[in-house]
Length: 141
Ligand code: UDP
Image (cartoon, rainbow, N blue to C red; front, side, top):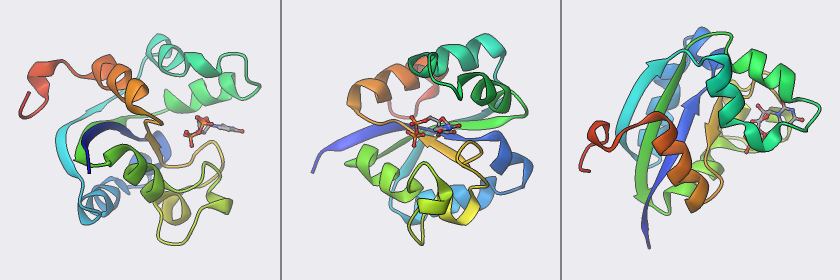
């Protein structure tokens, strides 16, 4: 077992639908620990920068519009194998294909408005956490 940290976003659709509390509870019930958390409204440049890896994809423009459409809750989560465990808890990108018991199955509205984001590997997790949090904001740093 490796203690890891991962980066999470509760996306605008879930915050607007008052699902933030239920999603945080699912994260805690899964045994992950919250090390930092805040609500922010992404600016266009922040959203474009965060999803820069997708900038050539057909869904990029809509994705940026969606991500800036309302507040989001960003957090750093910690636990044994936190990255893969949080990806499993989120479920497939498309909520229609997500397994029962996952956040996206329960709260996702579409392949775009799919309730949450989680880092896909250790390198991305580091970059994404430092994109939104200084080390002073993370408990235990
Ligand atoms: N997305 C979209 N249309 C697609 C695929 C992805 O709008 O056809 C959005 C969706 O919000 C997704 C995000 O782009 O969460 C990033 O896509 P990625 O393939 O990295 O999926 P994830 O890692 O979030 O499951």
